Length: 123
Image (cartoon, rainbow, N blue to C red):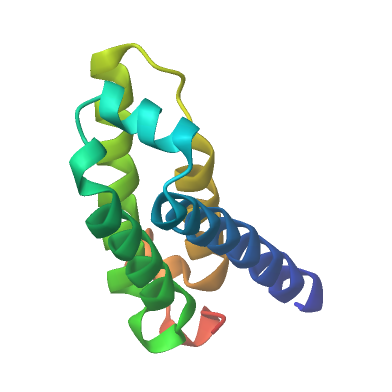
């Protein structure tokens, strides 16, 4: 049980760090970030995208809002992946989305397996 809790914490920390750092990089408006996002057509929306990323991650970290944070982060990264696919750019949204899913599964399996009891969840 202790190893599972540590794995959940590590996965949550990695997923959250990637999302928050991505949001911070968008807020600092680095030339590479601005150029890449302008190339795919969302360069004008750096600040809203960054705030969404950081806000959704905050919801995901907090145990009581983890499920809504999970849904919002999944939707955010799915949209990023769709944008990357449509413009032929590298798939940089796959890793954070996979980590979010792994962390969510380790923290609360009822997200994916509705018949599991709530007492099995890790907060």
